[in-house]
Every structure is written in C-alpha cells, then in structure tokens.
Length: 208
Image (cartoon, rainbow, N blue to C red; front, side, top):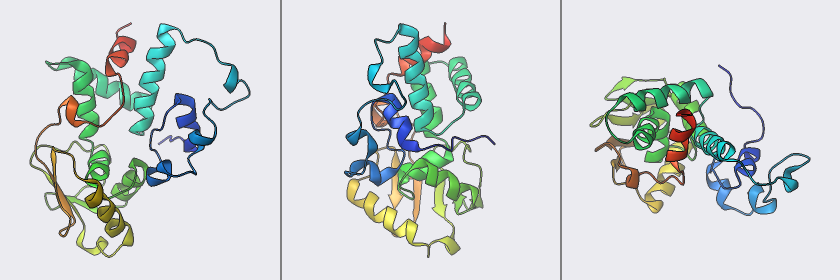
C-alpha cells in the first residue's frame, strides 16, 4: 500500500500547527514547527490569503494526516458517515476514532499512530482474545483490546503505559494498566475527542 514516506515534520509545518505525528518529540524543543513556523518549500514564507476552497482542502488534509490515511480511505469513511443519521462531521470523527490503530494509541500502548499501525500489523494485539492485525479494524463498544501475552515483555508498552497513566485516560475508554488492556465504554461524542479540527469544513469540501 502507498504510504507517506517523507519527513513527518513537514506535514505539521504545512498545516501551521502541531499534529503530534511523532508523539512525545512534538512537545520538546526538537519540534520543527517551533523552529520554523512557516510552510516548507521555496515560497513557504510568501504564501498569501487562502480561498474558501483552499481552507476546506487544508482542513481535510490535516485530519487525514493526523489519522494517517490516504484519500481513498478517508473519502470512504466520509461516505459512510454521510449515509448515517446525525451530524456528518461528528460521525466521521467517530469512525476514525474507532479504528484499531487509533484505539491502541488512545489507550496509551503507543506514543503515536504510526507506531500503533506498525505494532498492529505485526500482530501484537488481541481484540476480545482474538488476534487482529488490521489497523482499520472497527472497534465496537464493549470490545477489549489487549497486548498479546508474549509481547508484554517489550519495553515500548511498559514505557508508553506509564506515560499514559500520568497523562490520564479519555472518558470513553477504560484502561487496566497492570493488565496491559483497555476497553471501549461508549462511542465518543465530539466533546470526547481531543482534536483541533473544524470538521464542518470537511463536510463542505465533499459537498461541493
């Protein structure tokens, strides 16, 4: 599958804000956007006012990058959200939040979504006791996500869970730090999703 392989920090600079694609590094003085608060490229410091279309496109691209998706995947989620009753933008974010790689990240097993995707692909997690190695797997309410018993010895899980325990857990998740597992309590509302995004702009982009 095609995947973005250039420097992740360029994506943050392009959007003009931290997307936290590198986890903890984004909160240190090594963060590229703190050093260069302008888009990458030869004309990065000379870009003018954006059109309405450009603003909508930029917001869509930002959310797509945060969750690490390609255009085909992202538009598929939007079409599914559009078919359901409710607020399309909020439903879109709910679909994205319930991806297995995102849940793994939100629980605190990993420091960022890229790491989560890689560890899911390598088969380090179990959903309700069964091996699932598909990052896009749709986690349902009541599902229990756990680190495979043989994988618990890896330092990455202990270190990340210790950090997450200090930072706290989202209200729609329950985490057993000692047991290396978490549970989805309910579908997150918009207020439950810590994401600085204007999803209505995404709806407007696809509704053109």
